[in-house]
Amino acid sequence: MSDNKFQGLLAGKTGVIFGVAHKTSIAWGIAKKLHDAGMKLAFTYQGERLLDNVKKLVDEEMPGSLLIDCDVTDDAQVEAVFTKLDAEFGKLHTVVHSVAFAKKEDLAGGFIDTSRDGFMLAHNISAYSLTVVAKYAQPLLVKNGGGSIITLTYLGGERVVKNYNVMGVAKAALDMSVRYLASDLGPQNIRVNAISAGPIKTLAARGISGFSDILSYMEDHTPMKRNVTQDEVGGTGLYLACDELSSGVTGEVIHVDAGFHAVGF
Ligand code: NAD
Ligand code: IMJ
Image 1 (tube, rainbow, N blue to C red):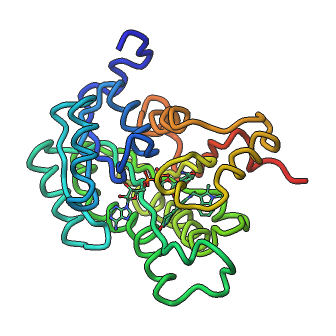
Image 2 (cartoon, rainbow, N blue to C red):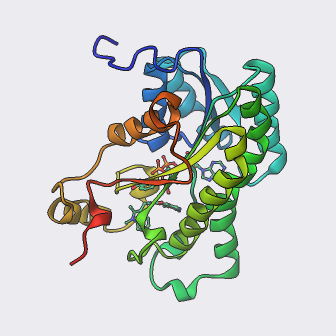
């Protein structure tokens, strides 16, 4: 790439990305930045249904990257990812966790109507999975002398956002997991941070009714009077992955939202 300002910044480093489903995925935006900076990457995908899509993307832009099947609700599958990475890479520097799911019916109407099942499902996939990923990543990150774990969160875990409902409660648990994990893993030079992205039209956003209205609301109400891009979130991912740039940063939630989190009425 001719205009690659960060070439070589992550040369010799390895990383694994959970959560690419499509070229619009936030995880793919981060992967592109890490790849351009020279990191060798592996991708997990959620079952055969997504393999074709992810394989096509990776073959076009990052041939040679590893692809590993992993449903994050299954401990054995998460463990197997890191066993494979140990065999293939021998060590690991960066883990990107960009995974969330709730039942569609729980992302509309009142939070008060959330079922026990829906609550557990959203928390299992969207919050607990970071902890199990961190647990199995830890030995490989330690072999590397430390590393960086990055997750994706949303403002709806700090403030009430219409229809975000159980996902907001799960994001609050995720944000707090970031702090506890940062505390557990800090002594091993492993940093754990979250990027709180503003609304971006991905697959996870497409299912939401009125998402276009949310995007245009942002254009009027963010300090920067615009939305953020996949590329901008990718840039913050690169910063958090790079020890030279963010070595003192852990337990942090960085808002990449054109400043929306900072404004009130
Ligand atoms: P996306 O649909 O591209 O990514 C979501 C990913 O979660 C998919 O790759 C999907 O396969 C994966 N996933 C769901 N259940 C899984 C399971 N059981 N096992 C393994 N993987 C599973 O959408 P996205 O918007 O890129 O979402 C990525 C992250 O960004 C999520 O945590 C989301 O909450 C967060 N986020 C999104 C926005 C936005 O507006 N798009 C804003 C802030 C934060
Ligand atoms: C999602 C729902 C309601 C409001 C929302 C969102 N706003 C934003 C999102 C304002 C920005 C997107 N977001 C931050 C997410 O984390 C989305 C997670 C998600 C999306 C779906 C859609 C399809 C489905 N289940 C989902 N689970 C989680 O069936």
